[in-house]
Image (cartoon, rainbow, N blue to C red; front, side, top):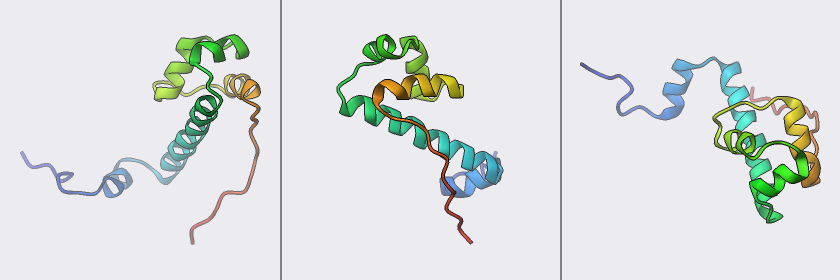
Length: 96
């Protein structure tokens, strides 16, 4: 059995498996969660402490941080507030 993915770059395989919209959505989700983790760690806040500050249960925070779930916008906002962060709508950079 041959596997055409062997020896291929992830970017090439990714383009075969996912639409450009799915890739963009995934990239944005990864960036958002990465910023949440970074802010939490920079402030020395544990997931348990963030639960106390945000009202979002620690297991939900853990699943969100590992990518096991996609959080709803209201959950993200509850988590961002005690971290001193918010969401902003900004234009996407376009690669022509």
